[in-house]
View 1 (cartoon, rainbow, N blue to C red):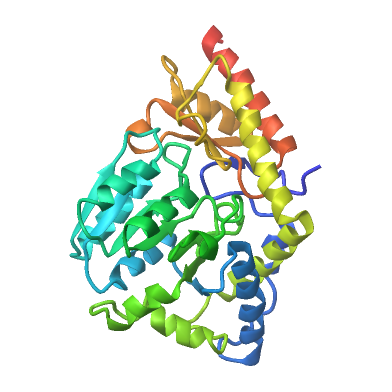
View 2 (cartoon, rainbow, N blue to C red):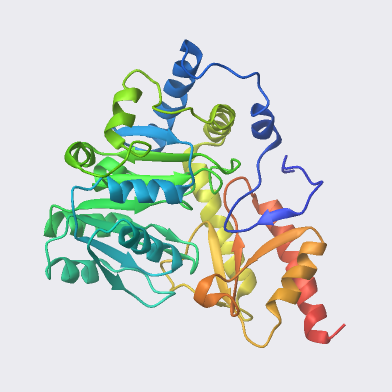
Length: 364
């Protein structure tokens, strides 16, 4: 039996996700000073473990920001453009919008929604122009696509010296990442997704190559200055006031992840994806191409149904499922199965979706 509290509508969303009671409770621990020895102990313990999850020797640090803030920081720490954006949905498009807002030059390589970014497409794009950076969303929640990060990173290394900047917002802590081995220069994620914490904390990992770029970048500001964060983390401190309660909760979440085991955690997410796909078979078409379907969220297409009415009926029964996003808003629904959602809870959600679907179709 899952230990997730049942006194509220349960979230099967692209995020935020459910928070375990013991993780939520950790946020109520007595406060500590943000410049004393206690915070250094907390940062060393948590960030060292996050680095192990990411399989990196690079600098890992927390930001009191949404992941969008870290994405903007990634752009501002570049010396100059141009930047190549690999766009396959709404959130990969966000990288491009942020770059344009920062007045940095760049291009988009766009693929159809529901399709992955393929390595050979990236190879061709990189042969057209010399880029300083390439941006990618690993797990595109608007479409349910898991892009082949390892293979794309290999192509970026083979064809260029560009920095690879990756949004792993909805994959980190649910899908295996090996940043150093694959050659990922910057990786970021908000902890309200597969980490299963409340919103407000973002984890960032940067390579030495990113830090070298940041050293001479102009107009990058102070809050997202990666070199400043690196210098502070050398003594397990932060440049600005850290979100202490969220760091307490991160420590508790890491302890829970250790007890589950990372590989079992990854396997659980794959199993839940497969269960949703088998449940949907014959009724709802997966929006993402086979072979690239996300382990943390399944986007399903449907026709001739009032999606909003259906999902509202499920909400009233205690299960909150996501509608489509952006271009897919009226023709897709998205079942989140990430973080601390387990197969038992997922089965309950699918049962309610089934029952309300039948009611809607019968007109009752």
